[in-house]
Image 1 (tube, helix red, strand yellow):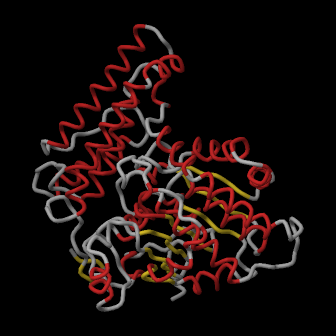
Image 2 (cartoon, one colour):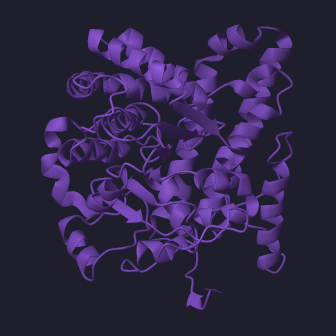
Image 3 (tube, helix red, strand yellow):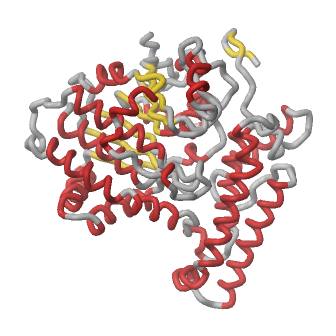
Length: 454
């Protein structure tokens, strides 16, 4: 495939038996589905108490479990990806995507082990939501991953207390609303790294397990982890956030729990010590990839920090609520974040979202799924420049904070991937290595008449 005269590689796929995509479709996705079913069975009484305890509700719950069990069998037996049939607004877009994939493949429908990994993995989570949506009872609002997210948060509560103490010592030293720009690079870099390593808390990678690998990284480990950041363009990000012209920053969120907490810590540093006056957070509109942040997770985190921590955490929660109440922080959802399309298609398919991001001075994309969608989840050579892999996506200057947990990495130096593999064979999936990458490119847009600043 070619685009603008450049050869674009093919997508990552479970068709490659040696890939993490294959392991995901073969093992991780069925395990995640099994845990969802276990949750529905184990929490049956709680669910029925919440949504209705009639015979009709009991049957609806059984039907949901049946639909999820069927989905698991479809994955394990490599069945065709079938059109969605619930009533959500995104059904038409999803089904058009499936039809287009079928047409591109000479009439053969996409299937779990042969089609693009990004498509089928996103599709599984959308089918989980469909299993709930097809219920005639109000169970469509149930989050089957909530308990896993909650347990992950409580496993990090000790680290949260330590971080809250350090953050408040920094931000409360400056009067709120002060015009003095007291942000220094060391403070910024410390909380940027905290936010980076907060991305280790990804329950979709651990198939929902809240083991040590998906727990918060203690502050004391940040310095020792610097050598594991394979690309660190923090200085380029600093040049943006340190400018007095930078008044808006956007976070495209990834995981709830500790990672969301670390996002809010960085946002507070930028809001209180820098020139940023507006922070916009972009969450998922439905449960997604086990631990991705929804608006309900955002609200739950604030309540949990306020009530489950100590006096410091309570002060921090009050501080963050004031940002929201006063209109300095904003929370958004958009259906595009839970479509299978990568971000190079956003301008065409969701121009409203693209233009909204274009109002920002810096868009921070968190985590693995955002990285995969930024780069198209394609089989790029490790040394391809990050901006090249974006393939024209650039509503505003952007960066990515990501611990590596999938088989796509760009922007490395020649020989760097091979040297890292010598240190750790599974370096691309362990989450032990990370990337801080930046692109200043703003690509032209017909509606905003933006021009490239390259």
